Image (cartoon, rainbow, N blue to C red; front, side, top):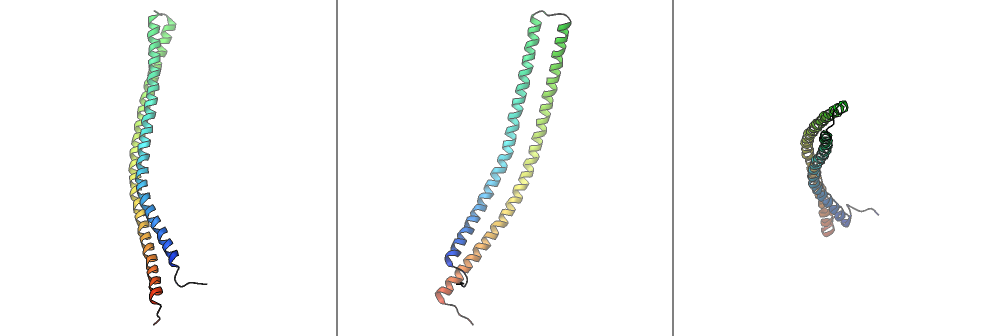
Length: 164
């Protein structure tokens, strides 16, 4: 059997579903801000940890070789092999200095990229929030239409339908 208009209970359920969607939009608004901010913070924190670990390892290696150099000097070592050893220590120190400088430069570039990413994410959030506002406006329109239909059906049920 077909029905004129719609069932009031079904319309009420639809209105509740639309209200839940509107609340979900508000939740998405807040979570988008939080998640994008956390993304930038997490990238910065991970880079800082990585830089600290790498520079710590480089410092440990430098310290080990410097201790070896000091021990070699204490044993009163002379001759060609000591010259080769001492030259290799110098080469090691230059290589480690370059690795340290390269690491610092790379992580500075990474920080700059994260800064740019943060700016892009801020732009994204602004645009996303605008789309959410549009979606929210449409749920208000849906809610209003359902409420209007409920009112019309309630009026017809309580006062009757007249045809002019």
